[in-house]
Length: 233
Image (cartoon, rainbow, N blue to C red; front, side, top):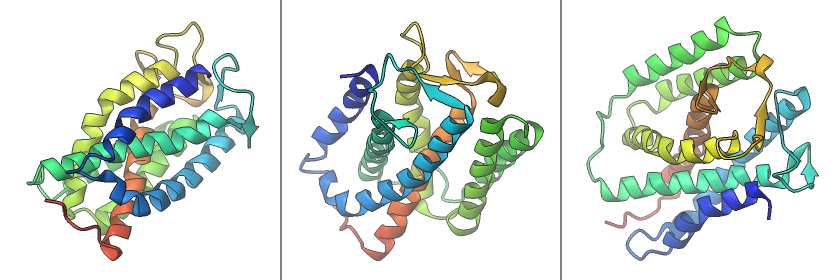
């Protein structure tokens, strides 16, 4: 297998195995989780393919399979299934084991602050493709959540999940961006990013990770509102 494929396997093996744990029974979420992941994956695959075509980023042929679908190696397609699945598993565990919302239900100040930061970054560096579109996308999604979801209890668990998931994020994304290899698995064109990196990770990926987590969780919670999954407590 390719190095990228091994990394995805290492990411999914524990969440997938523990999906059948009898108290959590994460597998009962699959009927709602599948469309949530597929809808968000469709969006990000289109985004990803477009960025590869524009030369914003690309993939080192030494670490991925040769199969390409719309400019993307098959591992990148799997990325948008494996990472959301594993992240939502963390989210579900937190909701299951932490009965009280970890933060105040009122999320407006946090959403407003991050929305302003991302929009400002996008506007100031509009000439850098990844920085601009990343900031614009985050701002748009956060504005929608400010209006419709800011007072929802699940948003509190989302923020906790985001902060906790940064730990595996730095490990996985660090490997992808060259922390353990001579060349990165995923390379970034310096013309299209700020050039500020957290070790090997472009700082824009912090925002990208937030959006990649928030979108499928929002869809899942929206579906759960209409097709309720019984509370297991």
